[in-house]
Image (tube, rainbow, N blue to C red; front, side, top):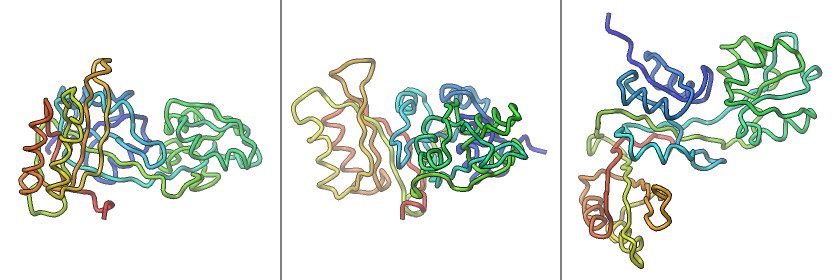
Length: 279
């Protein structure tokens, strides 16, 4: 029998990243890691075949650490998946909305579920991550403690759901990317494709304007452009960009060619199928 393939994620079992792994790689072994650094290391070393990494959230914005690890990691984006984020309020068996006094969760989750916390007069307690909060509450076995965690965490840690879907906004969605050691390029013509790449602009007036001009003139839709400093320097700026299309499409091929004139270190991180969520 072939050995189970492994996909690494950051967080504890029951975390949102774990849920996405289960949804899209149901036959794979999902491997929890303490930090994003550990996730990257697991794939780089061959301990895991793929990684599932959150990259943006519709409320909180970009997941900061990822942009620093990705360029130097040697890993490639081979897919993307969107997850509608759902949080349940959960406690130990026998607890109820009347018994709970404190609520434990990740700082972002607490910030995204303010209404339920205020409504029940709960004291918020920050945990390392949402699924870890559920584990801590289960271990404490205290009916005054509750957790705000993804639905899967209640199953894993044997907690009772006291209130479902307690997030303030129903459009709370996180985009995840799948990372691989191998560069696996989506086939051109096989459906909508995304291309992700990084580049550094030369430190010249209007360099970014000129660098991006080719995308406008060639009718290429850019869905993401983010800048961040490299090595603590205030002069050199690195950009992460994402566009609709395949590098072999004539328009995108010309735009990337023009980009090279005004930039240094253009590196394609991935050419992968667009998630149907985008449509």
